[in-house]
Amino acid sequence: MNRLVIRADADQARGTGHVMRTLALAQEWHQRGGPFLYIGRILSKALERRIEEEGGAVRRLDGVPDRDRDRATVHEEAGRGGWAVLDGYDFDADDEQDLRSAGCRVLSVDDSGSRARVCADLLLNQNACADRIEYDCSPGTTVLRGPRYALLRKSFRGQPGRPSQQARHGTFVMFGGSDAAGLTGRVLSSLAASDDPPRAGVAVLGPLANAGADAKRAIKRLGSGWSLESDAGDERLTAIISNSETAIAACGTSIWELAAFGVPTLAFAVAENQKQVLSCLVGMGAAADAGPFREGEFAASFDRFRSDASALARMRDLGPAMVDGRGARRVADAMLAFDSRAEAELRPADAGDAFLLWGWANDASTRAQSFQSEAIPWDDHRRWLAPRLTSEACRIYILEWKTIPVGVVRYDRIDAAMARISFAVDRDFRGQGLGLKLLEMSRPLASRDLAVESFEAETLPENAPSRKVFRRAGFLEEPGARGGRPRIRFVFNCRQASRMGS
Image 1 (cartoon, helix red, strand yellow):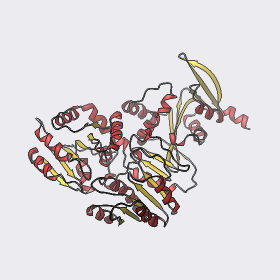
Image 2 (cartoon, rainbow, N blue to C red; image 1 turned 180 degrees about the vertical axis):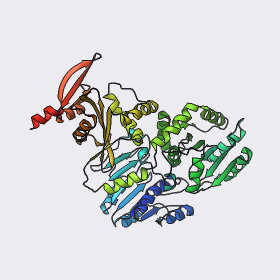
Image 3 (cartoon, rainbow, N blue to C red; image 1 turned 135 degrees about the horizontal axis):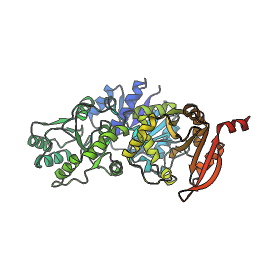
Image 4 (cartoon, rainbow, N blue to C red; image 1 turned 60 degrees about the horizontal axis):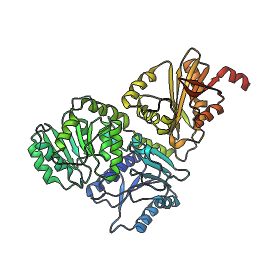
């Protein structure tokens, strides 16, 4: 495998998030036999040692940042081919074009949604709000959206999706690699001053955090059930998180690690780019919003959070469905498949696709073209999906292109000879003929598995894209109405189509 060149910084202002999440991808790359190099201003010797212990190398950018000089350094290293990864808020389409001119592929990691233009080969936004962002992408750019691609380091991949069944206790507190606002000490002090503080917990300070004195005093006040650790390694963090009943954390890299282990989290947006992410997680029921920190109010907010049993249960269930620990593997698969000529492949959906299917079902344009336009809550979706995955009268297939899920089609048998069809294509892959491919590839499988020879579908008259797909697939169109609302019915008979084709 070719070398992976990663451009990321870690300092007091930026924190360690860019380095730590790309390290998850570097681990996956290295595991497959590929070397990796970090280029950046990494002001933590511990982080440098960590990269080297993982089998990588570091080329430090010293001195005052100089865009042209820094870009030339990355260009030089990336000129050997392979992939370059850009993770930071200061990179733009010019950086991407410069790297591509050096002869390498480019993966850009974005979580701000403020990019005016994108020229990377792959654009990754692992946040739950990624589907709300309209990117201006160059032709040939493929977008990877959502927590399906959350980059978890290898120590956090063991049990995500299957949280520990052991009894959990205690509260986990962490505010990233730098905790520039000193929230660790302030939160711990508020808990210590409350009428009913948590009896046990662990607070962790990141490698660039400097608020240890306040945190130590608060830990003493909280009692012997609490401990404070500095720069805990991944193995230790995994052990703490897997044993935590609740968490208080920043809505940064750690939010995905906590979600993967099903730990309900009261989260702070400690940076501007975290506000939309947290809003989205709260909207879907995957986290709670701590709001701006207020000394005299936080303890009461935490009490409300930990006493809401139904909300906590939803977070425990939704978190592992949202982040299953396979994100780094999926991103690496997409990178390695990028230059392949592999054809689209169809596979049956399974329980691990629940969050993916929920996202497609709640896509804004999908809901607008549905007979029921209201958003579907997670609990309703989960209850609806589970019996259909095991039903003899239903089949759900997912179409993948270069390892990336691009669409779904569902067949429900409605009588002895007919099944009803519904399908959706991912927003980033519409207009490429994939809806037709979905129908043509899945129809013979559904006919065999459900023992039917006819299919029907219904669309709204204004749903021109779906109507076009059904026509091209050979369906006959029957305008009509049901429930007082106009709709178009499409019908396809395999036997008649076979006779006409012969």
